[in-house]
Length: 442
Image (cartoon, rainbow, N blue to C red; front, top):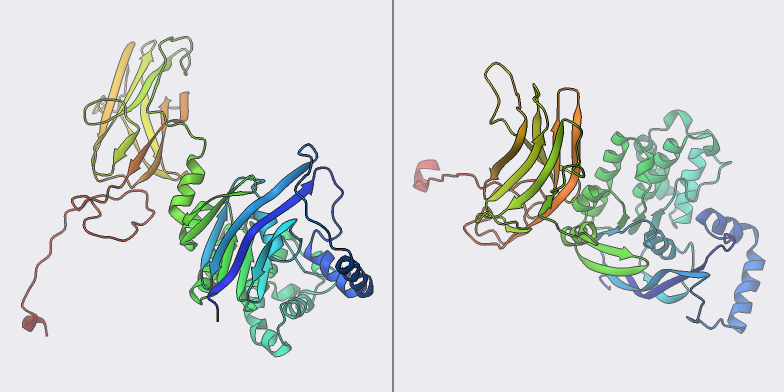
């Protein structure tokens, strides 16, 4: 038996801009068409076999768009792969083709196994049927026998938390109830391959955590999962591998960490310094203005590339245009996923009585970030100049720099050869270890 679950070869999908929506844009439409128009479908297939359509790529770019263009990759059984990219990158189109909801313009997609799909809220549900009836309907669509569905039935209902509404037509369900039941069915009816689009955003926070936990369980059971999401933390947590799509083209296929980094830094210009020489153009108000912000290496030179073992010096300049009783000067460091690593404020002028005054003048403040503290990856800097109830200026992501891991044994990683966790920091802490004769501890 082949260890390949999904094989995609030069897959492409062309759409005509402004065209009417296809009759088969959703799984529900497909099911209705097969059930109620079987002979029309057979006639259409026979006609297509007599007169095969020649695939052509000579389309006008003015009224057509390639949602996917020559995408190729393979997925092994038991792999959990994240698919990321900006809106319009082709992620949902790819899953629709793999789910057989829509057909490719050219290329080939081979699916080896029973597929469960969750591409939109209530995919495959019949609005007039009850929740109970839709569970059996979805199981039948997946090719499961009645006793298989019954064995999972109570678990599905409990996970979806719809016991009270089990015999209510799903057309009366809220969007949250819809997605809870849809996910529960897709995840519990034992598909060999699970395709999940960005539908978890519909649920509340607790349900999202519940779904992510279930997906982790599914992955540990050795089933194949393709997961489309803008939740990069979830991608990083669940997936070892990820695929980056951009404008229908596969940009990168690799480790989740490297693909996320590529996605977040695409089109980003690294700036280690930002200076305003003209006070009238500097950010701020008529009390405080920001003059400069920069990140420096150990030689006090502006730098945008650091090793995890390098100290980093942070410096800020600002104008105080008149005497003030309080000024908070601080900076925030965020990682590639927008998570706060830490914040630091200038406490060098704090007085024992609680005062934090600033006299009129031009100030330069700085601090040192020690070596072996930051994890590798892109770092974004935010600067705050604020009063007790006043915001003089907040500059988000004003400068950025990159910390790389040279994997030297004298760093925090030591001789560890594996992939370091995607944590905010990676401090080098002092450890001590003692060895005793084994006979003393037997």
